Image (cartoon, rainbow, N blue to C red; front, side, top):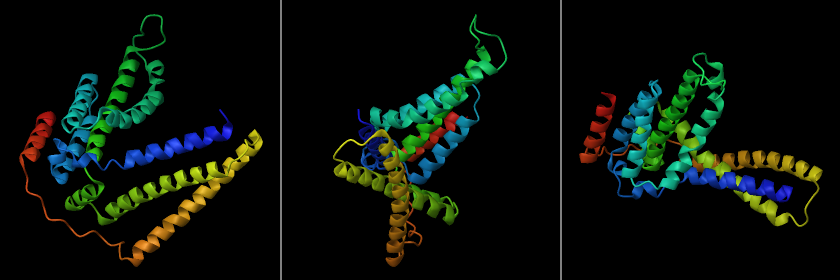
Length: 259
């Protein structure tokens, strides 16, 4: 495969995957369990489950919590591919980071292998713990619109500056990856002959620099346009939704798991 084609395909795949990760806006409209839960109750319950998960040190407990996250995704009719697509990346990275502990930690070794039983248990527990946390956060983001999530933060009295920064970051990430995808498409349309490796590296450096400059300029234009329309203020508070059976059921699940 050509060098420039490999770069273009890689960058385009990263941009498409990032936008797919951020724009899961059809799942909150499905008829599922967590979709029927009020965003404030859902946010509070998921935060409680994540806090509980990070405090556990037993492999059996964190494995049960990871299964609970998968069960919530299934009850909420989240496609398996979509759920696993968000679930595999961070745990795999965490596993690579803590893998040396299987050798460095002291304790009884496993036969002739330079691996300790305590180290392997630590590595597995850490990786499964990360998997459970990412699973809970994934079902929250996949079953809740981002605007509803920001409204839930406001109802929970989260500082307005933190909510505004979160909203701006989300919008800018969408802008960031959309601009990256457009620049890759424009580069492909202007490429006629395959350049040399040296020129390919030089053009790649120019591409990265141009991309950063253009993304900053476009972000400033979006901010000026939002200010001209009066869109930089806080979003009006939405009326509180009455609690239903789904809210009580989800609250009961959280209480039982914590207890």
